[in-house]
Image 1 (cartoon, rainbow, N blue to C red):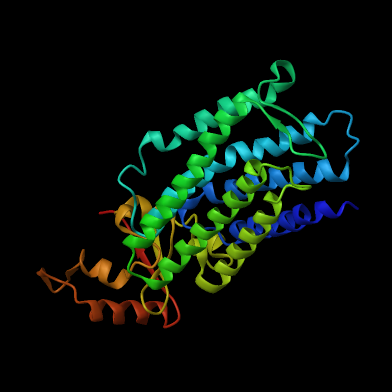
Image 2: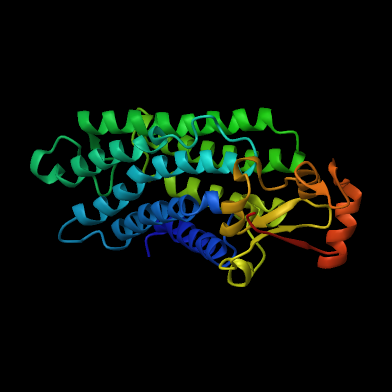
Length: 316
């Protein structure tokens, strides 16, 4: 086996693990489907890279290269969208986060994808090098400038988020995303911009490191605010809105029905639901007075138990 294929093999295994994690323990609604689609784009790249290393005598080498570049072209727009949805989950959405132009990078990516697919006819994207660095042409440099700029913009968004948030846990989650993105772009740019050609593309190694970081982040800080196992099957299709919190009242998960009833823009992972509800509910015995936080906490804990609290809501 070609030893240079090992990073891609490891990256594939780690990314499949991440895909399984977000399917079994789905993230909050804003991050679906951008989060799993991000993993899929990276898998396309590493599978294409594996194909090139393990089957170098492929009759048409443009097939694995097309698979590899399909992942590379659509990864930055997906990561760009994820950065905005990640900000929503943390409770610090960007003002433009729901505008249509956030999706504009996908249109540009589609154009670059068509340019890449038709390269065998016009030859203006790149001249493939199977065992060496490809020769990049003017269309490729336009594509690369746009895509690298988009990744750098994602890093800037995460840096802005880190400045905005007060929670140490939320900031640590942001750092995982920021550093993971930075690692990927550094490894990729190293391969592209060095004045001499490296004997291998270090980009899959960068994906190995970042994927490992995300897995550590999931288990250390609940990165992506993944819901408990089987949560989706229990409450996803409940007609009543449901909020699930930890013992301290920090929001863990909300279902689509809750999103339809409540002001979702003001909800975020780690939002203290007791305080959030107390600002919006009135004392049933005195409609002119807001409900007290401690009264609400005791009432909900009596209904839901001490480990987690589930709150239902419906429109009026």
